[in-house]
Image (cartoon, rainbow, N blue to C red; front, side):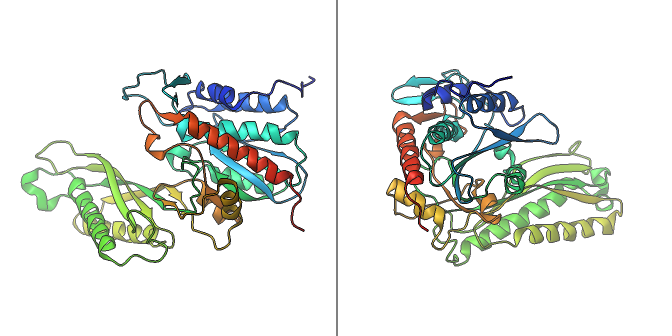
Length: 395
């Protein structure tokens, strides 16, 4: 089959309209979106490489334009979005709707607005006299742990595509240059107790009450962290310390039976440099489990790590920071407490920053929106980036 490599060049808004129409909630497939992006880029002579999920229902994609040399700038975004069920939307979340200077739709802000701009920029750059290449990396499952992107990064490194070195992650930052964010770690905990009548409580093991020990320990750790003097890396964050959290819990059978089961997720938001939490949480779980088994040996605690997001640490003389500051004119210091895929790229040797259109306060909200002003600012950023990549490069 002959592919038309001279198809129409869509404007960023038209691309965004297409992307929003794909309901790529993390629990569902993203393949229709990937198919469309691959097909659109193919009409402009750009070959896309896919990295399929193990189940085959999702895929990452990456692409390269420009000279076949190392040192590309990578535009990184995720394709998945959070659900809309239970939210009071006044517009159709899967139809891009303009109203009052805003573009409404699930993912407009987080982060299909950036994805659309990155796809547009890749096509624009394909026909520009680039001296330095541009790459696109679109991932899945960012919203459910930010771990799947590791497979995408490894595939990019192992491929025949020249390796990039500078990554711009387009999470909403109001086009400010974010050089650091917290890391995340989460364990799915299932406490297996032993049921007895509550009148015989000392001879049973209540999974719920044992869960209370771990939860209270988390409270104590939070209090100790808050009282400590922040490290130099932690000081710019709000709050300037690592936190532990349990957001949902289930278990038990009846008020007069010691709980046989209790399940929850314990997670951390850790400042850069604070790498102790995997070992500390595991050690506390084993300590509580030992106390349970002293009463009933058949009890246990299963703890499975369900996500681990590396922090993004500010870099000394970072290439990504320098580039993005030149393009935005933003020379202020910005860090955020949410996690992104930037840390995953950084631990694999890339220089990385976060910079994208939109306000993180709109992410995951009903009537999620991206202002026209921010979308235009993102497009202007991409235009300046292409100009930068066309300029003679330092020897």
